[in-house]
Image (cartoon, rainbow over all chains, first blue to last red; front, side):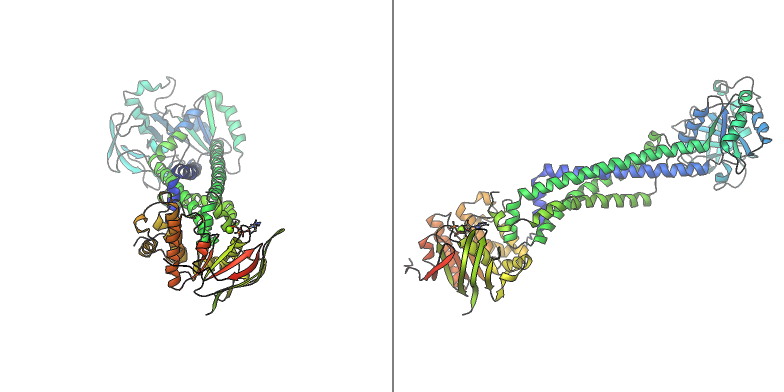
Length: 405
Length: 226
Ligand SMILES: Nc1ncnc2c1ncn2[C@@H]1O[C@H](COP(=O)(O)OP(=O)(O)OP(=O)(O)O)[C@@H](O)[C@H]1O
Ligand SMILES: [Mg+2]
């Protein structure tokens, strides 16, 4: 027995006007798609920024003059670079008022490592003074690194215990760090002295532009400072710069400033996403409202006939609302589905393209956000068709029925 | 026999127009009544009131014992759906549904669509072979028969037909009258509005309206059934 329900009537109507149906669904698609992608990217950036302020325990990074941009690129995006600073600067700093902790790091860019398709940033850390990397490295390894051991960032290929080749030498992967969404993900950490010797011994050494005047046994790349509690960072930086900038040819990056720059970039991005989604949503509401008003006007006669053969007003309202619901559910499902898939597959590329620290949300968070966006998309149609439904109530069945179709 | 329909002093006023004026009419169950009158005399107005599509300005209307002149739109819809089969001069069908689906949609709003029963209804009006055709593929007479099949599908107690043969040729008119005779024979009450004395002559009683008033009741001219 074939059944016929309102649902068949609705389906018949939607498929009778494939173009109109397609356009309306497409608008809802666009809305769900932008909102979902935008929200997920924003969330990733937000988590990345939070992670970054947690991970960068230093207040100020001192680098050679002109390298403030390079170290930011290295930290944020993992663009490897090599630069050199006199290690005596760190010793000078230790006696300064307002300086709590000082440590130095060595940044060496590998042109290419066997492990990786991307160039890798080698970071040498000083186990005696380090206060930046060790706190979160402690989560994965609870002993000092051995002579030929490295800790690798999240995106570096190779299992713990396996070896990795750097400058034609083999190192054992002692631990792998969790994802940070920062340049650390494509970095390899080793002992500072070991890194320095590696650089000098490697045949790449001459190409890395090591200045002649630096002591071959002590040079570093950057010196990181943690200020004493309650010290005004700006004043401290001013004082230190005045004293040492010329002597050591210094530049500096204030971490709080860097993070707040990123945070404001993130706010701008999120603001743009939500404003744009809002505009698309308003557009969707208006277009669907107008089209459904037109639909109700155009189908007055048909609705009149349905009323006369026994459809209640509620049944007709249900007919129209369900039609809108079907439209928007198709659009919302495709929109969130496509966006979810793209976020899943390309989140790494997207965060690289954005050039900001970003951590892709986990599956649960992705599903949760997707569910919310889908619901919002789903509601768009029924919400937008309400004015048309109200008009429906004013149709005088018998008169409408007699109108020309 | 009890009255299925009772109109007591019913008036319908559209602004300055008194479409119905103090009309009183009783129709007994199983009766076949024809309503005649010149154009604009209020026939359709009366059918709309009886058919629960409009409410009278004054007076009371009982349908199958229920006072419909007091009901709200929702209850009127329910009565119309459950007790009345409506047939019009124009063929009001849903253009994108096939013949059988047009019948089934009426079943659906009444209770539940049953294709078998819908096909049987089409068979009864001689449209069994056109069940899968869309309305635009049917002739006027066939569309009218489709409307009749749809009006009958939920076994209404009262069939209201407003000029059901107005757009039909003689042959189709005869077919429709035959169907009405069958229904009447099965006990249905039929009220038919017509301008045609020939159609009216099938009824047991003819009611005449002039300027919104009932002028007289008469027995139809004796008719020779061929
Ligand atoms: N909705 C309405 N608003 C105003 N006047 C109306 C309305 N419906 C009907 N009338 C008027 O009421 C009167 C009766 O109309 P009705 O349609 O009942 O006539 P009728 O007897 O069915 O005529 P016909 O034989 O031409 O169909 C007419 O003068 C008509 O103009
Ligand atoms: Mg009329």
